[in-house]
Length: 273
Image 1 (spheres, rainbow, N blue to C red):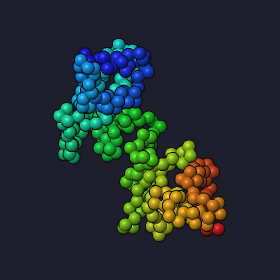
Image 2 (cartoon, helix red, strand yellow; image 1 turned 135 degrees about the vertical axis):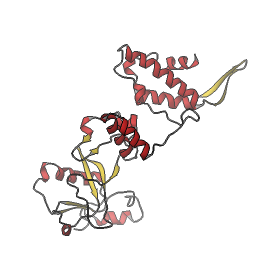
Image 3 (cartoon, one colour; image 1 turned 180 degrees about the horizontal axis):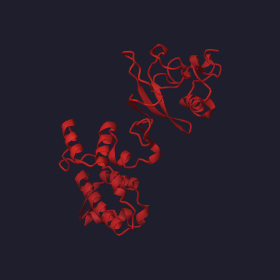
Image 4 (spheres, rainbow, N blue to C red; image 1 turned 90 degrees about the horizontal axis):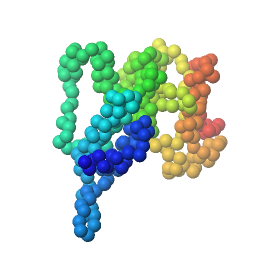
């Protein structure tokens, strides 16, 4: 009864189609900060914070209500499907970590599309509701076996993946040169940045290389020690940014770089001039 009152107060005045997964998660976060209210003769007394299990019960009720709306075709889908409960609920769920042998048994019994889903989850470690279920067709690169994750768990939205057989990224043959590939944005383009070393003596063709100079990074911040001196050494009098590098990469990755090969382009604001 109380759960229904809280849900009605939060969502009762809104149309079904206006309730999103983000709205529900914000509601849950707010409820987890609420305190137990005890009515007394002197007024309302606030006690300890609500238990996560109590708030999770409200989520289950809301999910059932919206499932009814989906069955009656009042909603195309249940927004609760995209909701991840903000905190762990002790005693409500028992975590289970699937081993390789168990995964093989499940794949053996499952139809092909389920096997593919299981492999995608275990190989990429995508969050099921936040990343996998929200994935769009244009975010999947089947040729290179790569997926683009716009809602990344990392602060800067960049993720690194181990190098596999990616088109245009031959695996080095020299010991100790095992690289990674970083997924990043370069202007309007989505690009794969090779982080490693390859050599002509390995039989690999020449490619265009972009060298960054004095760039503002976590390891070399523009406000770090000696930064004023270094800025004055450059012709432009400042540190470069990731956008400065991205603009050149975007040009080379597009039609503008179709005739560039086997050369090195330095983006350093005139540091070496």
